[in-house]
Length: 231
Image (tube, rainbow, N blue to C red; front, side, top):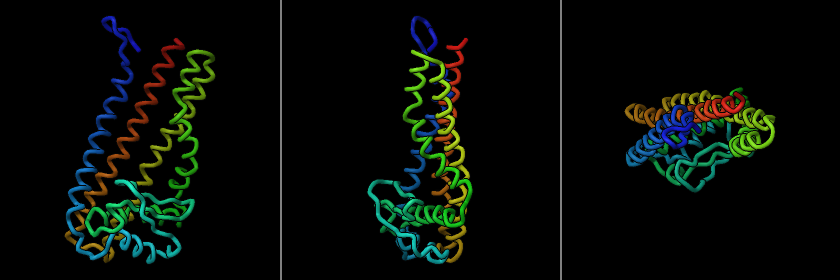
């Protein structure tokens, strides 16, 4: 906090975090808009999202990967621990371009896992530490201000794991989308549906870019605040 006109203004937040949050909000609006738009447009494949996923998995030798429906909107994900691909309500049973695109993207993660794709392995190993860092960083920073600077160092180290997780997520997600497009181009999607499918995947990618910038912004904010205290 910095004094300004009798008020205390969080300048690091305004400089580093707020612009990234604005971008993140815009990216979320865009993916929701594109998903909703192309949820109303048929893929003309005759295949539901679950059937698209099953087709891609089977032809890549992943017959043992199960497909389940999960509640929520855009909650689709692949769980490498149980080898289960979970598709949301708007994807699992629908034959839209959006459902086809999202289902193909998630199969990309399953293929990554089967091939031992290193960035995915690295992200999965970082995830537990990043989860702790995201929850506990401000607790350690507060303890550092109240007690010992050692807690600040621990907090920063934990949050570095959060930033690293977000950075590593970018190639994982971009690669999954690239794999998805290759699969769709290989006899699943009609030629005129490939461009809108790519648009859905690109919009989704922007949300990961924004999340990474938010994490970096928070790290810069923390470093600025803690360095000022040390000075």
